[in-house]
Amino acid sequence: MLQRIPDRVDPRRLAEQGETLEGRIKLNLLPRLAPLLAIADGEAAFVLRFSRDKLHRLIIQLRVGAELVLECQRCLDSMVQKVDSEVRLALVRGEMEAELLPKELEPLLSGEGEYLDIAELIEDELLLGIPSSPRHEKQNCSRQMDAQAHHLPETELKEDNPFAILAGLRAGKNDN
Ligand SMILES: [Zn+2]
Image (cartoon, rainbow, N blue to C red; front, side, top):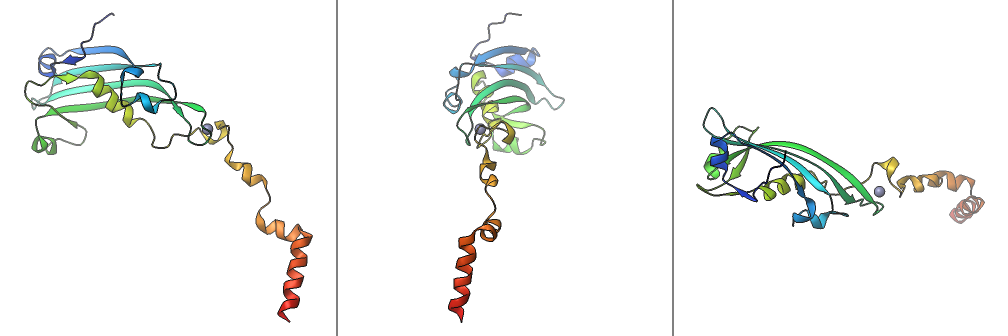
């Protein structure tokens, strides 16, 4: 299915028509996300469903999937963070309306007649999928934190180290 998706859409019109928009977006076109990526040449796949619920709320169901290449904060090599998230947004015109929403609906502020920027919506969702300090799983990280654990713990060092024993004897003498 080839579908030309406009950058900005009228959510009210799409909801009346029960539209579904499906497509892909290049990650390097997302100005807040791209600087956080080690490599920004991938794409995100998305599905957006517009509808009205029984209470006549405008609902946008968004699903986003992407493989984000981040920099591991431990070894500074690249790592892939898979994001596959789904959110149900409800269009609201202000704080009051937002507070009335059940918790399974995320408020999305939009004035009457205002158009929606699809890329912004997708970017918001992808940003939520990035950990604040991304790291490889320990076994996959090229900088092994257990390198230090290979050294003998300090107590064993003291017992085996003749100098430490000597130091201990001297300390004993000084006490007398
Ligand atoms: Zn790592």
